[in-house]
Image (cartoon, rainbow, N blue to C red; front, side):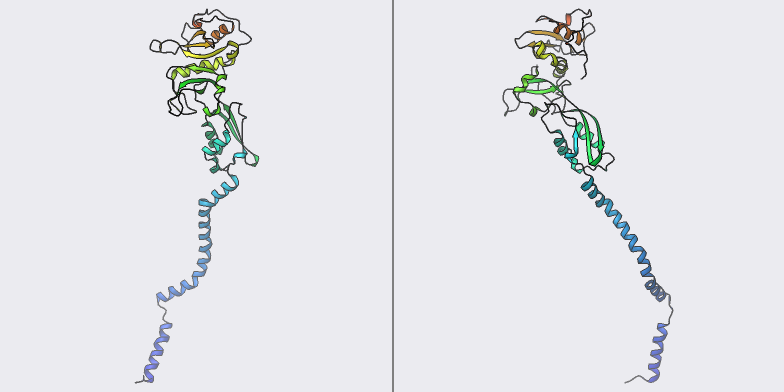
Length: 309
């Protein structure tokens, strides 16, 4: 059956009317098609800028800072170390502190470098850190100085018998790997029964008797050969005197009773420099340097009265 002409005319009319129907939904749809390219032309560049900035902050800046402004070990210069420092301090600090991850663009770079070097056992004090042209760093250091070898009996099965630990004038344990067995004879020996370090390298030895002897060793080390002194020991019982009392000895076994460590003398006890002057002047073996007269003694030209530690 075919549609009549009147029906076909009615259908066509409805189609045309539907196209011309200005309903709200059709208006919004058409408007979105017209406006979309214009909106996207603004949104896409803005979106790309935001994403690009975030990516730069997350990865790009770190990459550039590391590639072009990272700290290189060969660009670090330090105060020339003394001959007794055998360790490559720059390489050791650079490795242990992971300084390859530090950027010179970091506002705290100098402080972080100073902190890294301050932790090395041979470094007594970091004087300063400067950034120089070309990515170089200048690090000024004050080094520790060994003044004595502490005689100990090894507690490790692989090292039987007696051994020595080097200390500075503050009783800080120094790297033992930088000293040979023969070199121990170049320093005063501290002989304290049962002494053994309780801390690691670069830390305090951990024994008040050793610390007291190290203070005296600092004073006596420059005059060791002149006075022919070989060792420092503890005199008396600590239970009877809370302040460690020390004695010094020469290679032949002769002894002098020193008394309190430098700077901790009792009220009636002569100061350390006066005792040293008496030694230089030839105090007899067996003398108790605590009993010398407090009358002024002419300063010997051989005695340096400064105690710069």
